[in-house]
Every structure is written in structure tokens, then in C-alpha cells.
Length: 365
Image (cartoon, rainbow, N blue to C red):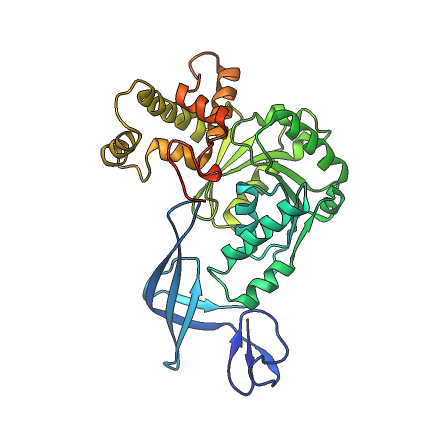
């Protein structure tokens, strides 16, 4: 559905009663079927990665009228385009955390118009998270629509607010004790039907579920950074995760435009199990003085056709996260995963990559 002014014909994709331009009544109309006549990609610089695209569309309706629209989803020339009002999703999602991944998740879910409850440890962290989400949404929506979506997101320090959530995603730092404690608290306040998920990149789902009374409702939903661009979600089944929980997890990932893969719980799942040793080997090559940081990355980009070099990728992931994941691999699989000396040195100095302004490379903050 769309909502169109009976006087000036301006329209909106969300409910509105009075036209903002002329003050006349706005009425609900059927979905407006149009054809995509042209698409222009606009790349927006971002500190987390080089560019975030959105698309300007030139649309033509059945009467030959032309319209311009902006959106984050890519479409092709000649494709049919149905303009509808944003529909509220049936699920309310809770996110525990305000870091890079939690903020990315919240931004993605508000893009898909899910009601959200974001839990953080401080007012400062919540305000920072809120500002970053707004900045992301403004790339795809006008300010009025962004305000409407932000109004459907509650930012709280109290975990009790998560009682209204149908799915709660824990996305705090990769610290086992901290995750155990927060998951235990979340289960105490959530509803009996709510699913609980973790966005961990390395901890065992079975190990995390050990503190829960209902591990059958717990699973891994491992999104990748940057959340807005990375297509994959690893949906991870712990030893006691119910089949129904897995199916709901996969459907949720699909509903937010991602491609889920089902994974049986194992050390670091699929991607990090394969990726981290490769990144560590690149860092060891640097330790040995074989080549400079820049040339190691250049070799991987040109020789392996990778979009980003391994050392730059460590900086993007976070040197601290990289070191912690290798530590988990070593704890679960044995020797052979000790981090490269340079990575350990950077970790100890707090030079943990892009978020700190310095890692293998230096960055402007």
C-alpha cells in the first residue's frame, strides 16, 4: 500500500493522515506497480569498509509518469517495482551490546523495519550506538522515515525490557565469562517462548548453552562485519538446540536478506576455522621479514583475487578479536594456532586495528 495526498499527489510508503506539503487528507491506495527504467549506484564512504552502496532508481508507472526513489537493495533495469508502505514485522528483536557488530545488526534490522530493543551498559554507549544507526539509515531513507524507524527502537540499560522480545541476540565482547553471565540474566527475564541467539565468532554454542535452563531455544547466529554488506550468516546448532529453533533461525536470516548456512557446533564454525590460520600465516610472513605489510597485502589481493589483504583484514576484524579467536582454536584443537609475534605486540599495545586508529596500518580517526 501507499498513502497519497488527495490534492497534490505527493505520496508516502508509511501511514500518514495529513499531507506535509499542502495539509490535505492523505488516503490509502493500492500498491503502485512501476518499471525500473534506470539505476544509478551511489557509493558512500564508511570508516568500517571502503564503500556502502545505495541505489537511485528512475521508475515509470503504467501512465508513463516518472518517479525517483532511493533504496539500499539493488534492482535491475526492466524489473518490476512494487511501491508499498513499510510493514511492521511481527517479531520484536532484542540486541544485547552496542559495539560494532551490535550496531550493525540494529542498523540492518531497522532497515527491515523490525521493532527493536537495544540493551547497553551505559548511556554514553547507547547514544553512540543510536547516532551510528541513524547515520546508516540516512543513506537509504529520508529524515522523516528515519525518525519513524528510530522511534520503533528502544535503547535501555535495563535487561528487564527484553521481556517483550521474541528473539534476543547477544553481541557483546568475546569473553566467555561475560557471555555466560549475560546469557544467564537474559534467560531469567525473557519470555518462555523467546529464542536466544549469540553472535559469537568463536565460542562453542554448546559451551555457551551450559548456563541455560532451556538450551533447546538457544543457537548461534553468526553475522559478519560489515553486517550491511556481508551476505553470509552461520546458523549454528549446539548439542541441545532444537530443530525448530534452527529452522526459525534460518528463516530469520533469510527475512533480513542474508544467506544462511546450517553448521553443527565445532571450533569457530566454518569461516573462522578456515580464515584465521590463513591470516595468521600472513602475519608470520611479516614477522619473518619476507615483505612489507603493504606488499604482503598486495600479493594476496592480486595473486589470490581477494578484495582486501590479510593484514588489512585483521585490522578490520580487530587485532584483539583475531588474537582471541586463535586462542579459542588453540584451546579447543591443540597446538599450532599461536598468534604471530607482531599481532601479539599490537594487541598488548592496544593497537587493535581500525577501531583504535592503529594496527598493522595507521588510520585517521
